[in-house]
Each structure stands twice: as structure tokens, then as C-alpha cells.
Length: 260
Image 1 (cartoon, helix red, strand yellow):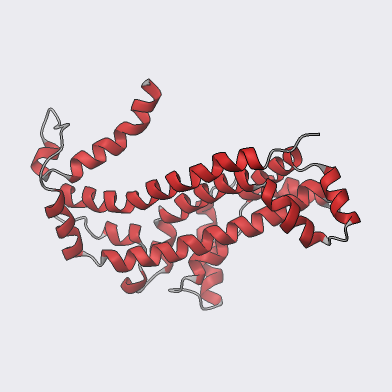
Image 2 (tube, rainbow, N blue to C red):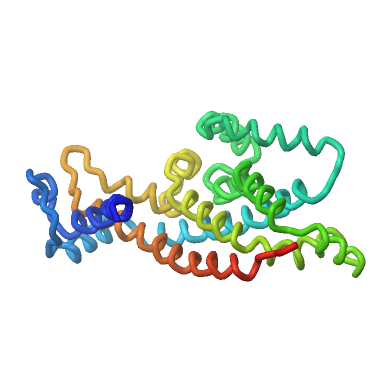
């Protein structure tokens, strides 16, 4: 119960702040009950930034990125787990090394690269660099080794399945629990990304939600109630998505179980 309280309280506090004025947020002791300013704060958000356009932009980038991550990472992870090819261990070791490199170190070379190919200011610059990542490949590889029985693959080969049929018809149904987690992880990561979209996007019409919400900060005065209301609106889709996919996660564990 203590762990649940610690996990849930930030969301509760966010909602409380979104329903109060800035003066109520900054007072001491803090006000821990809901106020009556939620609709006013939401209206202020809509009046100051193009929230719905940035919401659609973020939804498009996030969904496409998450689907690409699920496809390419599951394909690569399954290959590393169940197939032998020259340099397999060396390549996987190199992949693990990249996990130790902070992502911020790649911003400058990535920006130089997308500048040379003319992708600055486009959604391709947000989607393509992240369509596969080391963590996703590692996660699917580990899950595949434990969950996909080699006898199933041998039976598929006897039935004439090629590599892609083995992946699509045998591996993917078993990998559903791992894909559910990776999908949630990727969706949240792309949805909350702020720094890279801020660097590569130069058209306010294409701004993602986090970049748009950053414009709510005033130079001399900040309306924290308005900012918290915008943050609450940006957080709700993540909560709804998690509640939906978590059910798929649990059902996938039962449906994808394999016994020797």
C-alpha cells in the first residue's frame, strides 16, 4: 500500500494543481484538495497554444514510431535468439555496448546527418532514427530464448515455412507479452520526448505536444495552474493507453505460454 501511494501521489498532485490557481499552488502548507479552476485552466491552455494540432502531431509520430520499433526489434531479437549466422555474438556484444552510451551524445552527429539528407523540420527526422533500438532488440531476444520452443520452429520448417513465416506465424503470437511491454515503453518514451523534437523541428505547426507545452512558460510570470492543466491533458492518453494495453499484456501471458 505504501508503494501504491508513492506511485499514485504524483498523478493526484498533478490533478490537484491543475484544478487550482497559481496562488493556491505556491502557498504553504500546500493545498491537497481539488479546486474549481480546472475548466478555466484548460481554456487558458487552448487560448495560448494550438494544443489539438500538436496533440495530433504527437499521436502520429508516436504511433508510427512504436509500430516500427515493435516490428524491427522483434524481427532482430527473434533472429538473434533462434538463428545462427556469422558474427552473431560479436554483433550482439556491440549492440549491448551501445546501451552504455548516453543518447544525448548522438544528438550532434544525428543532426549533422539529417541536415545533409534534408530531413530537418520533417517527421522523418523524429521517426527514422528510433525505429530500432538496442534495448528493444535485447528485450525481445531474451524473451524469445525463454519462450519460443525450438520444436515449434522445427515443425514449422517441416511444414515449409520460410524465415518470415516462422517469425510471423509462430514467433509473434508467443511474443505478445513482450511486445505489449515494449509497445508501452516505446509509446511513453516517444510521447514524452522533448529535446530531440525541439532540435529538429522548426515549424510551429509541426511541433509535438511537449515542445508546444513548453511555450506556456512565461518570461516574467508563470501560470502554474495552466501549465499543470496542459500537462494533465498530455498525460491522460498515456494512462488510457496503458490501461488498454495492460489487459493485452496479461492475456498474452496466458495465450503465449509454451510448455516442453
